[in-house]
Image (cartoon, rainbow over all chains, first blue to last red; front, side, top):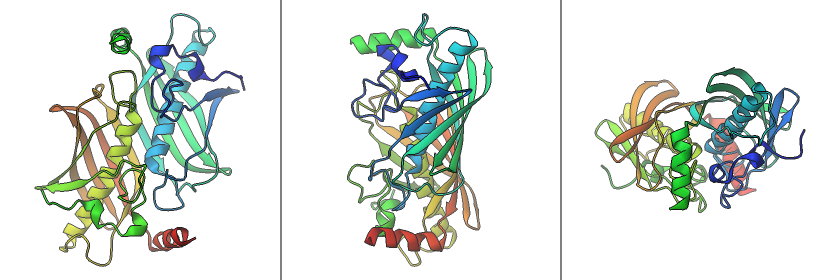
Length: 163
Length: 163
């Protein structure tokens, strides 16, 4: 597992995401890492991240799957291009679709492990399967179809930041 | 549109959800209403609910779809039983699966409208289609497969609340 997370390599103007942006003080700031051919992130929910008392809010789990999925997609794209994270040009992904299946309630309290597996890297599209694991038990599975951010949107984002 | 939201009828021990619980002070507290045969909720994202600057965080949109979907499922179940919301026994739904397709980026700033359509009510399962609409434009569509909370979980939730 490398020391610097995928998200630490995002350029500043792509680092405001509520889920994974290191510059979003109110956000979750999740951190994703390689672990062999899989990727992993860990997150500790707050007591207020509840669904029914005692269980984690499903919307939070969907959000974590989403951001770990797009982070994994970016890392997979760099790896497919045989270049290290952080090299130019930067690559960033948005979610095209997010499919989440809740297998069982996720207990609120312990840290959550998110484990990503790259199913496909094809052109500007990467498909990632993500498992939510708590105390060794898989409670939720998700599929993220991630699409590389088009150039005109990264231009807009810089404009928005400067305005 | 009725004055009291679906979520206002949830019993207290089912009202802690981060997305829609009226007793969760840190949560979104979304409010869903009938609008003819459809359901509607409105939500104003905060400036920090950002994805790439200028656009709404996809995880928030998934969360709103989720809660509006389960709220709609509960209302649909009461309606299918020809009884008003708030009558006994209470009915509450959890998400079995959540499928979200991001058609285009959702601009951050205006209020978001969530519009639910009930596709199917069958036993303990309700399927709801939800559209995210901003300034009249549909930016995201979601499908929520909601499952009625089993009795043993509502017992657990009361225990958790009392502990």
